[in-house]
Image (cartoon, rainbow, N blue to C red; front, side, top):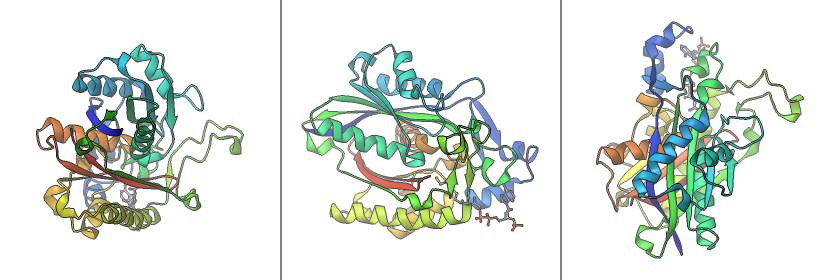
Length: 321
Ligand code: COA
């Protein structure tokens, strides 16, 4: 039994925050943000929390798969901005919103969360344990960034993406390979330092902090290695890839990794200018947008990559169905 990506869906909150808007909040300017990151706008959830975004993305993925929520065997949700501190998981809240009683779990792999969720769904399906798994990457990072810190608040945005991963006997449409990694020695580089038991469960230090420069360098190095590895071990080159769908953190990281594997610019999908870094949601949001525009078509081979806090990083070779 193989696992395939049967459908994709997304939900993006309405409110748009432009670089010009940010100029009124922190000491920054459109030129700096555009030049260093490629970001022009990001969407912000006002009255919604992460499970609301996740639920709407899940409904979209279910609709696109022509499936009812009752057909789902399990929910795996990746987020760094969960509804609650430790419990219940946001996945449980989403299951309730969908009206189903099924195994549901959150995973914390930061911006690599969607690729980790994909790997877990693939393993559950290939083992024969489940047939249909709903995976979701959902974030309201606007609620965990420090709006007084210009070095981070300009980078992130809110949104959610979801996919139905299901069992297939057809190898042609199956996920080919997934590469996931983590190295905790970088734990302090990208962190929300408060909250956990280490800090007496502080609730006033939830802000995301980042050593941007160092993060940039490790991201480019590890991502380039991961995409090279996954292509090599599957005897593929960038010529065999129809679409490079990188995590949308920063245009310069995407460009550097694309160059490392000689990926032509026209195959790289870019949405970071519109949505900023939406962490675990960015890859499914990007696939969804390009699929709805009719760019990504059935049978196209996608190369995904992502990098995030931990550090975690990974890549995946996924045909679009
Ligand atoms: N507006 C204006 N100036 C800013 C600014 C902002 N929003 N943020 C930082 N600056 C200033 C800094 O204070 C610094 O000023 P100084 O030289 O007077 O000290 C200057 O810009 C350069 O800062 P630096 O941090 O060296 O910039 P950079 O070229 O590394 O770019 C990032 C900063 C964050 C854009 C870049 O490091 C990056 O993209 N890192 C990776 C981030 C990322 O994608 N993380 C998520 C991974 S999932």
